[in-house]
Image (cartoon, rainbow, N blue to C red; front, top):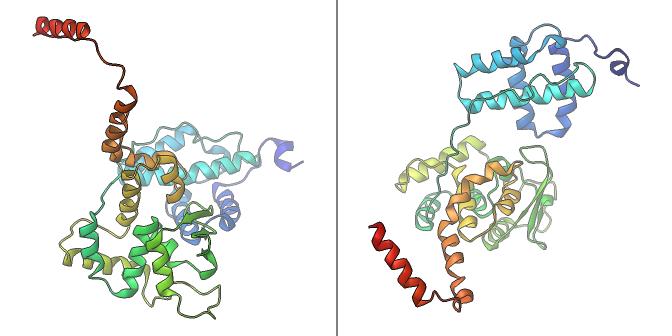
Length: 308
């Protein structure tokens, strides 16, 4: 049995627990997410929660939320407290603290999710203004809903053209997922596969530009095409919106996008309004024999007249 179980709690500082927590998290997270959590701990959480871990209280967490809310956006506060919650859960599970002090702490309400997508003719105009290399990246983004980092980090061993899918070993949330491919996505890979001797570990996109430069090239193409307020990441929204317009259920869109929480996908719920109307109207063929009788119609019209 662990020492923590014998004594109830182990006297350690917040900084010491944070280092243990990051050591455990590192193999579970993609590099970008690990760097993000490390940065939040170093720049914000460690300076605020000084001293022994046992002294971290709900009141202290609420004070942190209050003070940070005066300086940064609600979304940033929620991300920082999310890291804190995971750290405190780790500490409680290992007996360093009796309980998670951040549980049920009220957080600022997140802003409404941004939903910007392009019509097919707008998208075509943007793609025509991109270099062939960046165009292929953008085409894959709108065809699969993958994130920029996921696309640029693809290796040929991740791509299964025979089964029309990509097997991502690790996504933003630290979990792997399968992304299914349509014809546009398959065409992108076919255009890039030029050598049958390609090593599986080689990157699909061996670009001599940074991810940020890819995004800037895309924004310049948007401006040239007369498309304002649209970023590379919005291609992901365009993909999800098109799926929803085709009547795809939210839970299936969630899996394809790799959202951990269905609430993140719910921003697309309203998109299929017309599809819902069409589905409801399609019941007319089934219910056609259940006619409203003339007597009921007459009574209804009389009631409407009285109300007027």
